[in-house]
Length: 257
Image (cartoon, rainbow, N blue to C red; front, side, top):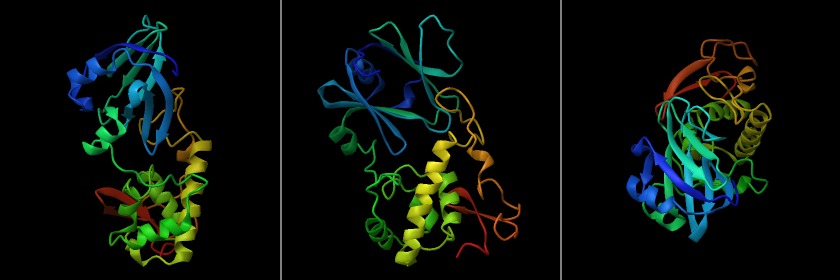
């Protein structure tokens, strides 16, 4: 992708574009060269000419594919980008929870379509002291704080539950009550949960497929997520389920404090 120029954009489901207006999006991105590719939290970042960014959040079911234009268009393909080498970048999203943004970083932050993200939990520089200070300011359930991307970037429902179980912390405990020792355990658990999932190519508990269209294997290693009522793998007690921040949350009442 790096070095390619976007020569045409076909937007079939305009509401996926959150900034700017869909017509402006199409006109503005046409002719721009892709200078870099990266990731921040759950966002894929295409660095473009003139300090602009194409930002893509895949939502629950989004996927990107580079194809030949002659290849049959898969159902639910909502955006296509024609590239100067004759290939197409296609965005497919059956559930349409994804979103696309275009602009400079300042424009996207000012419009509040791109959030100010917290540190990356798998970053080698991820600091326990900084995490402790962030949690001390939050009088909210720990699970809700982990899902807040401004606190930590990239942690979703599955790995919040998994990390809290590994750290032996209740998801409904107030974040500001954690001791420094508990935060050290939580930091280590976040890193361990995410790195293990990456090695296993993700958790295919629903529609998720990896970049090659294959199912991941991490769902076979999950300790608590999706296992409400089943025995805890540590103590054997049935796992409990509650709702926090609108998300089903599974934990062990005996092992997590």
